[in-house]
Structure formats: structure tokens, C-alpha cells
Amino acid sequence: MFESEEFKGCMETDVCAFVDPRTSANGVRVLCAEESFEPEDGVNIIDDQHVQYNIARMIHGIPESGNELNG
Image 1 (cartoon, helix red, strand yellow):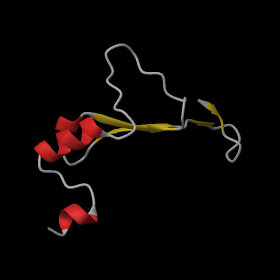
Image 2 (cartoon, rainbow, N blue to C red):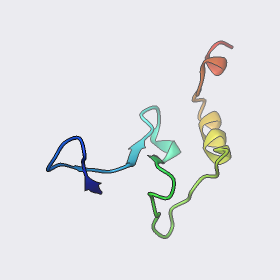
Image 3 (cartoon, rainbow, N blue to C red):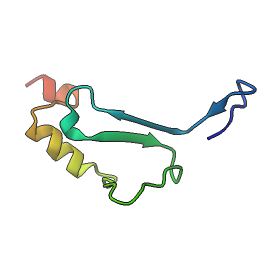
Image 4 (cartoon, rainbow, N blue to C red):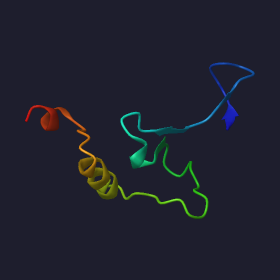
């Protein structure tokens, strides 16, 4: 965390984590600036291609984009 330049006296972070609202089967997604998140032991980081995430969401029938919704 760091002090906000925009909101004096407030703290900010450049890490956002959330459970996919469509299903908890996909685990937690973390969006962050490069090198701003250091995972703890046992945390699985998905590669830049999001291969594992995409496989998991397809197995659960969760569309990701307009191309997958227009079928």
C-alpha cells in the first residue's frame, strides 16, 4: 500500500483480487501492476496466456467474450 497522491491521508494499492462472480470454481483473479504482487507459498500464478484460467472457465461453460456469446 502507498499514500494516495489524489486523496491525501488515504492509502491506495495497485492490487485488486476478486472471486469470479459467475462461479467460485475458477478461484480468485488478481489484477495488478507488474511486480506489485508477491504470492505466498501454494498460490498458483497463471501464465501470461491465461491458458489454465481459460481451460477452467470453458470446462464450467463460462463465456469470456462477445465471440463466445454469439455462437
